[in-house]
Length: 162
Ligand SMILES: Cc1cc2nc3c(=O)[nH]c(=O)nc-3n(C[C@H](O)[C@H](O)[C@H](O)COP(=O)(O)O)c2cc1C
Image (cartoon, rainbow, N blue to C red; front, side):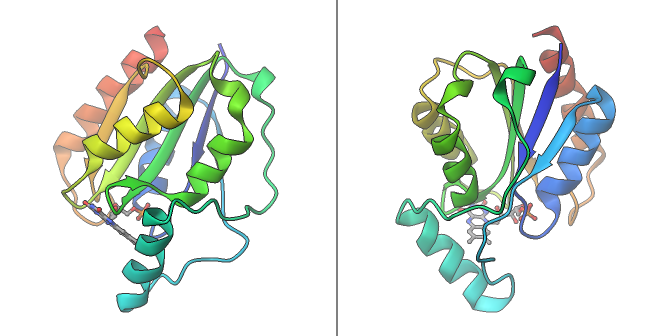
């Protein structure tokens, strides 16, 4: 079984979780980035990213190396933006419609509101009945919490079992 983690992270929390998961599952890790980076400081950070998410934008991405046929499990990682998944992930999902026959798991990082809604939006957007596993973490890099390791462990176990 070969697994890929595809994630976007603006300020490192989703990256933090991606690295932990990758270590446990020995996956390939593909970080995606928009060509035009979102502002990542101050009020602008929330305004432009939030607007982009609300408008349903699909920003152009920098080149990344992903061939769906190499994997049978895909793990998507995204921060929550305005109760949705981040726009760069939307672009990735739009451009890779051929992943629907894979096992797909999702992990999200947020500050406390809208993760369930975002996961449901992503499920509908991809067009699958259910995810293999779901993981929701509260700012895991910024707010250390030993429970996160337990949840990550459980998530990885579900991904492994398939
Ligand atoms: C544009 C923007 C919108 C956000 N919207 C939400 C939100 O709706 N709900 C929430 O709980 N956190 C929200 N957050 C906080 C992030 O989801 C959270 O800090 C996450 O851990 C960041 O992940 P990252 O460090 O990988 O970028 C938002 C952050 C940004 C930048």
